[in-house]
Image (cartoon, rainbow, N blue to C red; front, side, top):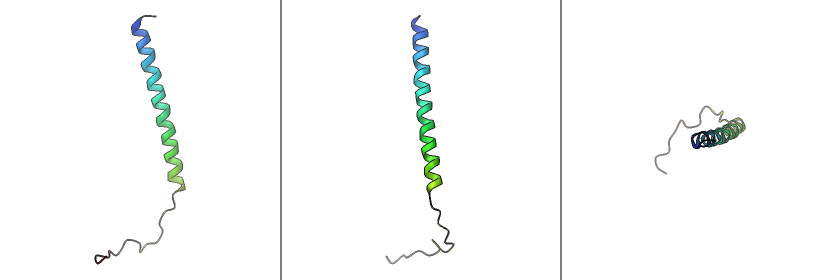
Length: 52
């Protein structure tokens, strides 16, 4: 193989590894977002205690 082909092959493999890593992180974030319990109290955050 020529050096150009070796470099191209290596860069493609590195890009594929990065893409796989991003996919795993996105799947983990999606799982985390599904597990979040949303605040359903409509009065939450309506008042601010400025004396504290």
